[in-house]
Image 1 (cartoon, helix red, strand yellow):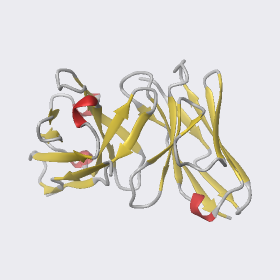
Image 2 (tube, helix red, strand yellow):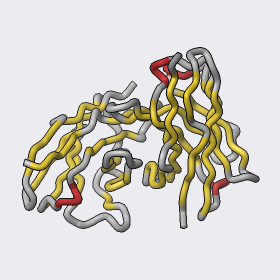
Image 3 (cartoon, one colour):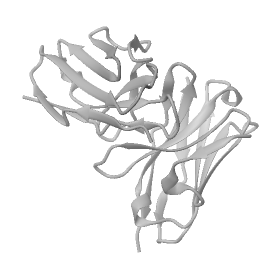
Image 4 (cartoon, chains in turn cyan, yellow):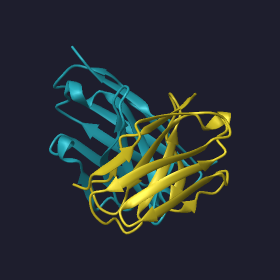
Length: 118
Length: 107
């Protein structure tokens, strides 16, 4: 079964750090670009970050530039999001998603909740 | 950044109704538009890609169309399982952007 499973969310104080993980199974992880998308409580979907298949190229939303870093370990079939200098407005469910050229994001994880609060 | 303006924000409909949701891009996105369905507490599910192509396994009552920079999702014969929130998304250029969402409610 093709699936993505996120983990690593939780409660963190403003200014703190957290690392999210997304483990892929059922497909050749190293062949796909991957993305992180977040959704604040009761709000819409917002694209956060993307990485190409071998990890050599990344792109981030302006709202997280300089604070979040996307990376991957193809040997472990795992995508990461390192989040530093967290703010209250980063509170959201974070989804990882597989990107297929032409198709868009066809596979999504179940999401992991990040709460930034003192 | 590319702006995606989605309307309406809420839609009340009955089972069997034909429902239309519209998304307008602020500039050309060359048909690189997807539609997703999201239910409470769940991840988005891809319905339509490349503006009008139906994702495998998605019922044929869902369809997408485009006219210039205006894109439409149509549900022909609303079913109980279709009450959810729908989002459009452009993947023509970064940053990817989503519409604000349309919640389809039971009338």
